[in-house]
Image 1 (tube, rainbow, N blue to C red):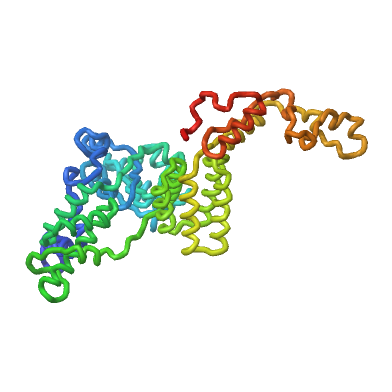
Image 2: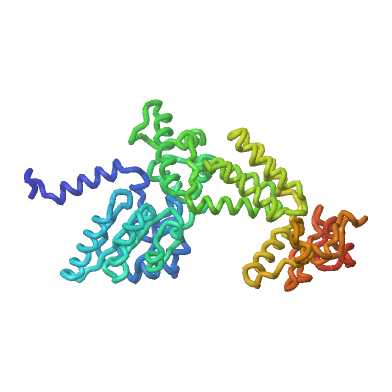
Length: 457
């Protein structure tokens, strides 16, 4: 009995009921079984690997990796509910090394005294320092705890290799449009509101794959709709109202563009590959994504300068000038205006003919420098400007190209060990076709030999 004489279970039940009534919609709609989870069918569908392990209570230490609102915490809690093990949640934001060690000691005691294992759930595990992660390692390694770490950051960037190697990585994907729409319809029923097609589509679109964002948006929009229907302030009660498009947009007036460390690399990669693939529309889109996420424009400019030589190269020698001019504009002008210069460079690089032959020539030469003996500089190429150099044979046999009416001479400029090696083979793309033809004439070769890289006129 409680001090008031009221049975504790009735009091606790009433408190739980009141908390559930007041809880945010996302908390009230948290699934109570794996079958209620929306999304992640590749992990939780019938016969899917994670579902099989959870159904058999055979889950070993795991890292749940994915964007916010994809169900990582929910699945961890459901895993604990289906397991005979104790569930101990920790937050990497507040827990320290001492907390980790205390919980490992408690897990060992529980295992010895009760024969019961422990699931240690560590939310935002990427926030743990290396020393904190090291403190976890012994308990994970000897099976004292089954670790479930949830993270929005790429674990290959944020977790110690030993900890990662002892855990199974499960990737949670953003929810699809149909899944988000199903979730929104369920939420609307709980909130006792109707939704038109436009409002539902906007709610899904603005969520960007985040289930929690859908529920939060709908909860606010439902309050606005009920207030409009009653002609008074928003509240908990009231009859059914219809959520409008305007109320959905008002409920989510700002969009916080997520851009973690791993997504930084992914979006930059998408930009580079779009430009390499000659798609100016995709290039401008990914540029806009980078700038909206607060990316340093100087970093973007540096990547464009690199791409101008690596992927456009001699097919359009002006590409490097354009990219370098954009980089200078970023330094001199700054955002937001410098975004125009970056956009011009992106469009130029995307639409330019492509050739990586200059880059490939460098890579081939670097490989030979690293793997083959360094050949002596041929005598005719050695420095001959000082007194006595001629006596050593330096410069003997060197023909000055400008003395030849053609402006070049047929001579060997590589070490003897590499004589005849070709690192640079120009393509037939853009301006590089003229370079190819010029070199072929000097070599007495057919510039149009059928190697498949001469572009159609």
